[in-house]
Length: 130
Image: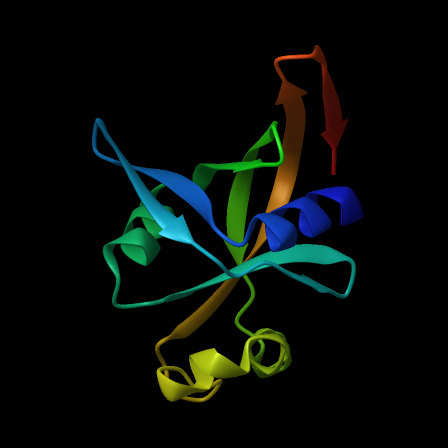
């Protein structure tokens, strides 16, 4: 899990895919945070992404950095505790211009049943689960 966290943090941006009906939806994200032994992302409840995940929590993350790409297939589960939201926002203080742990909009989700695959053109894929 730490390797996934570090890779996504170093990449700076990754792409999150969700499903809306029978249509895949992909958008860039930048938040990744380790909190209480779980890997978290952050979004706003009013965004279509949050609504899609509420209907179907299965998601996939993809990032590319230094010749290696990472795919993480997982379920994203909401953690509605103020401590989890505050921890994410403390890790990304620039988000505090738009979000607040008590605003009713900030949502943090952790990865569950995750399968992470690291791959490159030069070697065999490495798979880890958490």
